[in-house]
Length: 208
Image 1 (cartoon, rainbow, N blue to C red):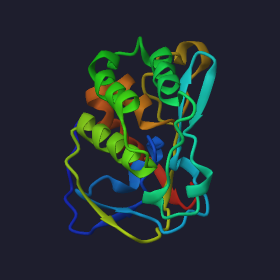
Image 2: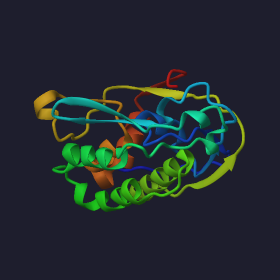
Image 3: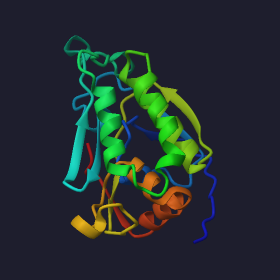
């Protein structure tokens, strides 16, 4: 497959999600500059502290626990709770789901370092580290800017465009997962898959 990068002078505003669903990247394709919005108050945390993967039992949703006393603060001041060993649990779940995927050995070390060695208490910093790592894996050159503002979320409904998944032969293809699913399964072709999805999608407001 071939793709062309369409450079955009317009800054695209987007929330900073945690290992965002594949469809949340579609409106950003074609732009090499994004504004990550440090929202002053989150009415809904949504995908900012959770992500979805799939193993042979089906979809798994993982949620990062937050300190209750910080949930009403601006996004970049919300703190994660480290009372439970959620980092190791999440990475072990990734290994169970994708340990036999074509690109596990290629991408796992960078993600393992983030999941197990990240020390900042702030959700924003953790999510930014994950996003930066995934953009590097995609070889997607993007300049990231940060502004203090709310953001309207415009997402895409994705037509079922199947790509390779480890357990698809057992449970069928599962759409709309974290970008990590696409990276581990498609690797160097992941960005091409995103473009194909965008070309077969409709834009509506639906993901919060």
